[in-house]
Image (cartoon, rainbow, N blue to C red; front, side, top):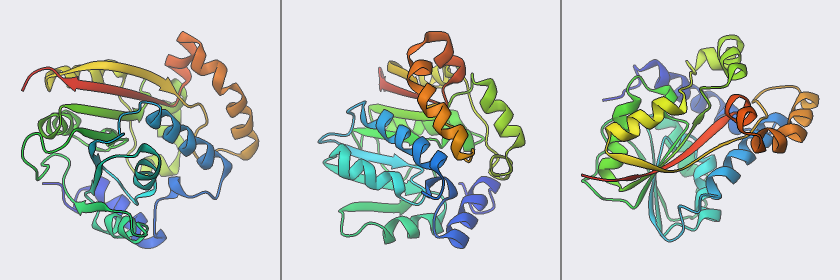
Length: 242
């Protein structure tokens, strides 16, 4: 069971307690606004939430969860995180929306098989020492999984992971799409869509963010550039056997 003694959970628990939310969902800097909005657009463009019973695993402070409810139009939405303080923050933002927030371990989801139509694993796998277990659990409780992760092919991202104080404090890492494909197959899934997107890194100066946002459409549209330059990958997969 993931507990607050897990350094990954501790870091986000501390963020929620001290800041009342997460740094990367704060609108304080242009780079954060641009990067988070591109993530929202990429995930919503999959059209995976509409009229479905969705489980959002690793919901954090609820910033994105509210976007999925408001713009994805799920039939029902449950959101979980291992950091209790983050779940408290998420609940406080709910403003009457019928979203169920719960503390839970992504490696031991507390629901029987096929409880949901879709599981969203948004930027949580790279915080775990057992990402393959998270994917297997997602496929246990739903026949379809939507994964959003940092792009492990990006050399720029690898540099940021080593140099950024935030990334080091939160033990940030990234996996290649090849590894993600392998874990999906191991869990009995088959990839049905895959796209790279985003180019603006979190926490960069405004001038850099504006320049990279202008270049983003070209990077996303060019095969080799998008594989090496895009910030994130979005993979949608379906279970092919139980």
